[in-house]
Amino acid sequence: MTPVFYILAILTLAGGLAAVTLKNTVHCALALTVAFAGLALFFLQLDAQFAGFAQILIYIGAVAILVVFAILLTRSSEAEASGGILSRHWLAGLIIAAAVFAVLGWAILRGAQALPQESAVPAVTVHQIGTALMGRYVLPLEIVALLLTSALIGAVIVAMHEKESAK
Amino acid sequence: MIERLDQIFILLRDWLVHFLPANWQAVVATVLNVVAIIAVFPTLFALVTVMERKGLGRMQNRFGPNRVGPYGLFQPVADGIKALTKEDVVPFRADTIVHFVAPLVLVVAVFMGFSVLPMGRNMVLADMDAGLLFFFAMGASTELSVFMAGWSSRNKYSLLGAMRAVAQMISYEVPLLMSGLAVVMISGSLTLSKIVEAQNRYTFGLPHWYVFTPWGFAGLVLFSIAAMAETNRSPFDLPEGESELVAGYFTEYSGFKFALFFLGEYVGMFSIAGMGATLFLGGWSAPLAILNWVPSWIWFFGKLMIAMCLFIWIRGTMPRLRQDQLMNFAWKFVIPMTLVNLFVAALWRFVGPGWARWVVCWAILIAFYVLMGQTILRRRGLGPRSYRYAE
Image (cartoon, rainbow over all chains, first blue to last red; front, side, top):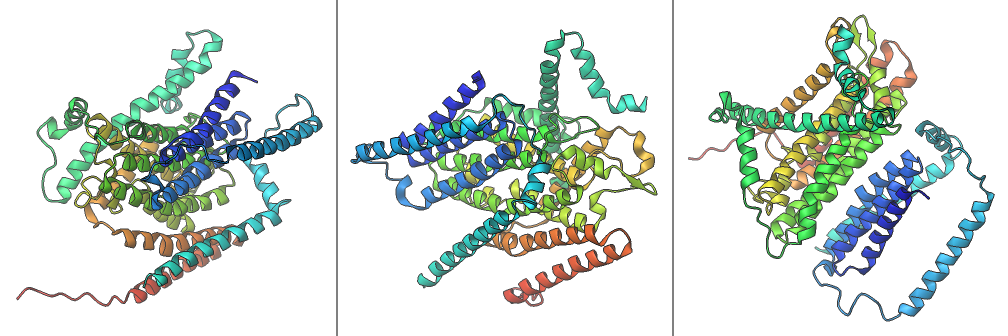
């Protein structure tokens, strides 16, 4: 656990915490972007270049913008959160979050035993990712493409219907 | 001798660094590289602002600035002094932190893009395996700063400008990436220095630049259109529509922060022009094999300057596109054209060398272009131009 890991961990956790505790919704979205950036830096620290840059390109470049547009187009950016930031059912939320964390932690710790200790980091080049995607994982790739196409068509249809219903 | 001139900056850096102990050398070498980039590109920015104002002026049948120095060359100095000494006005209800951070994010993201551009033989700051992806990731981060600037000003016009700018930038990011994708397909690598190496070959003295192939030519045209839209440059500059929104998303910025936005926009233009030169125009390789004695960095910066002249030329010539025209153009024409370009690039590769692939690829591209144009024009119901004069 190098110092860089701790710095990045603090950055990501701070971003995540700020994203749920800030009052202004747009500030929350920007803090979420900081958390995404922290994750991308984690990927880069683990030498997964493609994953890191794709994280920046997709999450910060597209998902964060989507979140921000959604906030702007609804009313939640003008009315600040009233009644505090904690909801009334905070105990149930806490229990559920702890349960999910326990499951994730158990899964990771069980999986970590199966990994070889201190092995040399395999240098995964983009070429290998490409051949894997086109060779072994071509069926998931095509299914994801189909999913994205259907999402795109769905978005166009939803937008079109709104135009018709406005007449 | 020619080799030394070509590598002169590398040799200079190595000479400066060899005075230091061995374990400091790598770090200081990287710092010197970064300092060189930070020194060169703002200087070019100053030069290009003068070039643009004089160029636009001549195109509009007037002189540009000509008071400050010989032929107005010291105008950027005057602009810099003005920007630095102007009072920094922040609106009372503006969101101070986000308002402050927005130009910083823009400038940082834009300068990061230069780290993967090969500016000469062996002159890449960080030769990353997925260099192209890094460049476009940094470009995507600039959109967020535009939104932050517009929103934090608490000004309806700024917000409007920011929303338009972000919508435009995300629409044109798709053709930007996909026109570069054809190059990646053919050269087989995301590493920019390998893409330049693949174009650095000559047959009968003519280079193998990708722009001389059908898909490369279409790709360069589409890439320039998308690049102009990405940097909010005329004719796509409705977000900073000077006659409508005052200055769009940077209305509420004055003084040094405005200068930072201006710098960020122009340096972004440099980096995208550099990427276009790397992908399609062969980066630092010379146009003819006999011209290889000219240093490689002169070719790279020459191509960059020619691209700048093209940007300025188009700014002075074409009228501004309206927001819906802009979006229609992106989604209904440019994106199908880039998809066809990808298909043509694949066809180019699989038909194999010979004259057949030239004919087939050009035929498909021209047919699709004409077809798309006719379809869009017919749907719009435009006829031949008719003039009405005042009586």
